[in-house]
Image (cartoon, rainbow, N blue to C red; front, side, top):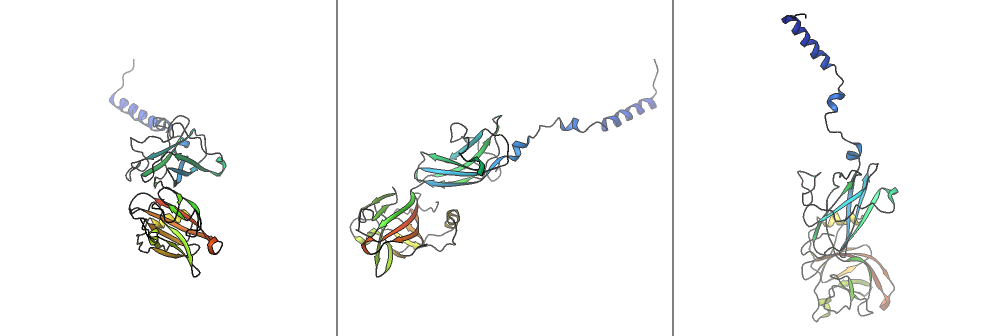
Length: 289
């Protein structure tokens, strides 16, 4: 057996350290949790919500390519994300869909749509989406959108007392007579000018609606909604002269609002009709459309 002095032992230690420092760096990398490309490169984005009467259409874009199992859609009465943790959901968050949503029938366009039904009108909902991967792990959530369901759509109003469809009840989205207690507006023409007016002008026990012509930049519906979110309501008129393209705010006596767009006019005299788009927010004092 050979004996090693202190100098020899020191030299051996230095050589060992040098050899360890020259070892492949992959040894250290292998000790860290692997990050799979699909977990970072596939996620939902640009989520939008189009509310309706007790329903909503949720639309988003899928970012990235790869194998997925579907999507979880979250619709909650409470906010789902926080500013401090935008990539995490609240522990109480549960999917609205009972099984993974596979996507719509046209995956080639990269846009997904989900129809959610059985919701309550006049309630704030917070909506976001996550991708589900084959191993059941989840992507980061999309942006979060707040929405309120309520009646909306396009209608044609005939001139006052010219037919059955001469009034509209915003709360139900149903046609009623112009002088019905639940009516919210009617249409008429006088001296070549077209008007929307409050049923209170007809007397009796009818609603008093107030109108305001909105000054908005032209754009698509999403652009109009964003502008409405910054608008201070100032509806004071019980009738308003209208023309195609006008955007109008209607205030009901219960402090709820509807936004109306004048699409076009058809016919003349007693046969004159106005085509309107309307969206009603049943949440008092709010302009969430």
